[in-house]
Structure formats: structure tokens, C-alpha cells
Amino acid sequence: MKINTTQELDQQLATPDEALIEDLSRIEGDIMILGLGGKMGPSLAMLAKNAIEKAGLKKRVTGVSRFSNKVLRDELEDFGIETIAGDLLDEGFLRNLPPSKNVIYMAGNKFGTSGNEHFTWAMNAYLPGRVAEKYPQSNIVVFSSGNIYPFMPTDGPGANESTQPGPIGEYAQSCLGRERVFEHFSIKNKTPMLIYRLNYAVDLRYGVIYEVAKSVFNDKPIDISTGYANVIWQGDANSYAIRSLLYCESPAKFLNITGPEKVSIAWLANEFGAIMDKPVNLVGETEPTCLLNDASHSFELFGKPKVGLDQIIEWTADWVMSGGEELGKPTHFQERKGNF
Image 1 (cartoon, rainbow, N blue to C red):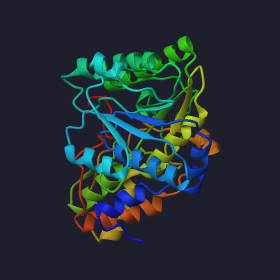
Image 2: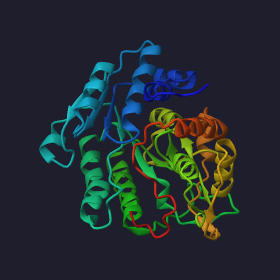
Image 3: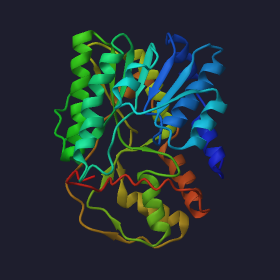
């Protein structure tokens, strides 16, 4: 199977599996997504809506964002997702949001942190406290990042949930700040929460896999100083996020989310070189450490991702060679000093 168009990709990302449909039947109440306007939010909302309909449920899905892209808002509304436009940092706007039994918190700031650190900290560490106070009785799944961990040896399994944080750079530090603030209010208000430590989600328009494929296709050198990465198909990551509403606890539960493979960047580049019949230009010396996460516990809860690495590579190669759309949002997974 090939994915030839953005519409086909969106449909693939929004198609629920039986496990999600079954779990949604066990989740009580409506779902609100805060900060829906990023890379993952729209497809997460559509996935939830489709699963609700297939399960024959009456739950509402509401997305909150600035919605500077009116076309996106119209598409979501046409899909049956309720939308609310506004700035979550506006206290009056936040205070007037409707209640929701379930909240998926996706708001945050990463790229552009350097030189704009104050805004990143406001979004990633101040706003969480305001949201937690707004929704003390809700189940809250908090999108976080594997960047809160230190670099781990490349010959090991990666950081698990008991690994002590060691964030590098202000972005990663602010992500840990987000976690700690939510954790505080989970304990203070007995709010059930799950901290969702994700890296790196991919679809065909962005992500580690896409970036390596595009570099090979365009005959560009590939830096392998950061020699490995973890990835997970965006559809699987979104499905796990929704299903995580069943596992919210007080104090907050922490959960690593990524794929099972430790992907060698050199190996990945050579795979694309063979598929595309292109020479591969690897540069740099691979460092003995990098950002690697062990998501074994998530597999115990949800099973392994439905879309495997081989399928992602095949789809991505076809997408790049046929000139498919690019989101223009690089991961900077090679960054080793935390400057985003």
C-alpha cells in the first residue's frame, strides 16, 4: 500500500484500531484538547472523533487553539470537532473555557526558544499551573518530551521512567518545569494525570525519518554524530495518548512513548540510498551517547505500535521521491547542546 496524497495520509492517521475503540468505550465523559494547532493535534482530534463514532458513543471532542489557520478550524468543524479560538495565556479566556472530564494538554513551545526564553518558560512551565487549577477534577494527559532525560549510552536500552531527569538546555529544562508543575497540582488537588514523555513522532511530512530520506534524495551530507534515535508513527502516538486517559493517577504517572527500535542514522541513510538508488554521504564521528528512551512500559499497557519501522521507511521513501508535502518543521534531533 502506498500513501499518495495528503488526504490519504490524513485518513491513515485518523483511522482507529479496535484497541482504541474499545478503550474509548471505557473512558467516561467528553474530551478537550488544549493546544490542538500543532503537528499532532488535528489528527489526534480526528482520530478520537472517528473512534467515538465507530464505538457508537456520544462523546464530544473539543479543540482549543489560537486557530490562526482558519482553514484548519473549518476542516475540524466540518469533521464534527467543536473548536474554541483563543490564547491560553489569557487568564480571562482560560477561566471561561467549559468543563471537561478529560483533558489532553498539547500546548507548549520549542522552536524559537533561543532568544525568546521567557515565552518558552511561560508556555511550558507557567501555563501548566493555570490549566491544572482550571481542571482539578479532570483526567489530564500532559504531552511532555523525552528531552527531559540526559543523554544515554548508545549501547544501552535508553532511559526508562525511573531514570533521573537531566535536561540539556532551556527548552528541555522548561519541559521538566512543565512536568513538575503539573505533578505538584496532581498531588495538591488529587487530580489524576499522566505525563506523556514522547520522542520522536513521525509522519511522512516531518520527523527524523523524513529528514534523513530527504537528505539522501537531495544528495546532502548526513551528520551521524548523533548516531541513533527513537521514532514512533504519529497515528500510534496519538492513539496511545487518547488511551492514556485510562491510566491517569494521582500522584501523576510518568510514561515513555516511542517505538521499540533504536534506529541507527547511518543504517537508515543506507536503507534510503538503496531504495532511491542514491549515494549516501555520511559525515562526523558517532558520539557514544545520545537521547534514547526505553518505552517498554507503554508496550505492556498498549502493545507495540501498529505501524512498524519498515512500513514507515517504505512510505517515506515513496513520499519523498514523488515530491510529497513537507511541513517545514525540522526536529533538530542532532542538537547536542539543547539550543532550539
